[in-house]
Image (cartoon, rainbow, N blue to C red; front, side, top):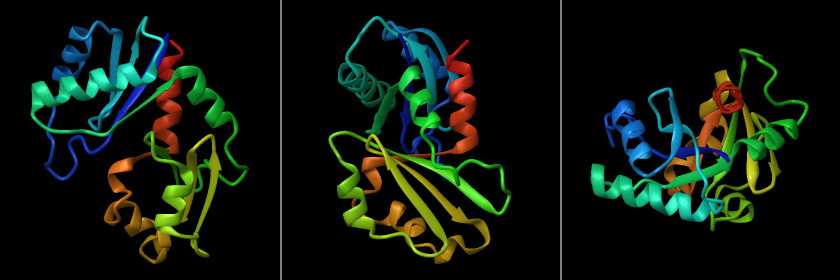
Amino acid sequence: MKYIALLRGINISGKNKVAMSELKKEFTNLGFKEVITYLNSGNVVFESDINDKNVIKNNIQIMIKNKFNFDIPTYVITSQELGELIDHSPEWWGKDNKEIYDNIIFVISPTTYNEVFNTIGSPNEYEKIQEYKNNIFWSFDLKNYRKSNWWSKTASTNISDKITIRTANTMRKILEISKK
């Protein structure tokens, strides 16, 4: 089965540095096949015979701790689930409007959408959110991003290590890669 692992906080602002070639090698050492990394921020597409996303997630987190000496929250989704998620995006999301920044917030289990929403609060007039299967489509006005309610709170609240965020374009490309 094809999986995608989204590693939170890899190669951000000089922290948690990992070469993607090294990460790919370590995923292969875990027994994963057809390992492909995308960008330099911990996006990994791979195949596995393991049918339990929690086992896969735990194996990845243990490997990162053992090989790179830091803890990384990890989100694992199947290629099929990612396709379904993107197919259920709201009509306002992902329209390639350069004035709007479109993201998906992946909520890392066991955290729930309600916990994220209750921590961050309601979106304001500069942003929109919509939940689908415990993930959040989030778009904001690029020129007013600092005024959005969710922008600073996704990084500064106690929820920040329980989510990982990717852009619409990144996730579309990862989905495309996973279908090959």
